[in-house]
Image (cartoon, rainbow, N blue to C red; front, side, top):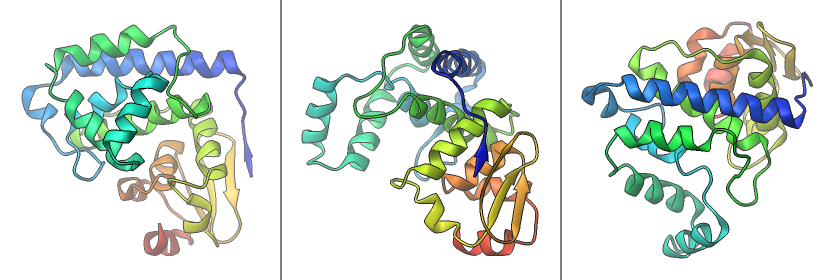
Length: 213
């Protein structure tokens, strides 16, 4: 595997930039766009945006929400997003901008998860709306490397066993086997189990990836 690393200050600068630009995007969305299905199955654009505003949830709230969800992390994430989505949509940009400059994060995650969330969920929102959202190559490579190295919840290495992934717009690659290549934004979507990225990828390993990924 190869991929550019980011030091901590670079990482948080990238997170701040993503949150600021997402807040700007939220300010532009129409009522219809807010209700559009996102790339997250069963989630509207509104629900994904609401989830992003919960990125600094503290220990006490997180433990209480987990107990309410009877120990299910997935249920907790879903239910908290749905409740937050009841807020007026104009609040989402305000809440996201309020995080800029802070390095607070939810419990038991690395500094890379907030970047990964912002990049991937930004695509979850933008792609179904037909809006172009740029993924900075260095930030995208760092996020892709994190997904590749972690197991749960994406299991990317297991799903993509037998192919080699390579970004065409930055220095990142992983795996062994027939090549699948394309922009890091599309690779990130594929790594996180979103088929919408496959149309921007190419290579002899794409048949295998479509079948398994």
